[in-house]
Length: 217
Ligand code: PRP
Ligand code: URA
Image (cartoon, rainbow, N blue to C red; front, side, top):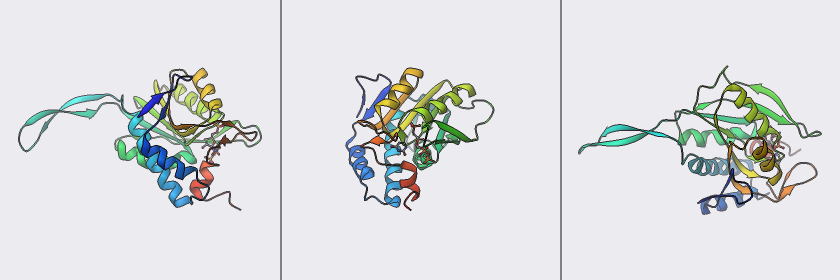
């Protein structure tokens, strides 16, 4: 249900009907923050499920009530890196999928004038303690925030990194893919373009404001 994109080899855009259905509700300007948060969580779960299809497992022995068999357990130590603020809404769903994942918060906001990311919070330990890092952020617009997050993680020693976005713009995918061809990007939709204020069109507006009810005057 996920397809690699013909123009961007590192991008996978989900085609799952459940994601498409929920995404249309998420985009709707009439969707209130409570429902918006639920949808962010549900779509994140489905995207995470697809993005983890190649996570490594190791064999374990399991005794059913009838006999012993060989089962599997997740072998990769997984780190979730939500980009504050909007990425916070994706964390719980990912923790449902991978209860043993570690969560490392990274605070970045986009300067509205320059559109460049500004780092204001970093709770990462001194060096990487996980095998696979999943960066969580609903929106990939210019790609500045995602690139900054990837650079922080690479400096930290992360080797396998995936970026999970709900909606991506071609400009952002291009920026991340050319600087970081080793980072797989998973999203629910690749939209048309950015507007002159750096917003994704048609997009959903400001993902942080819509989750947390801010920016409404
Ligand atoms: C949004 C979004 C990304 C960033 C994407 O965050 O959640 O982090 O913009 O834009 P870019 O690809 O052009 O860098 P924002 O800066 O609005 O902060 P917020 O999550 O606190 O609202
Ligand atoms: N950040 C958002 O929240 N929305 C956009 O469209 C672009 C960046």
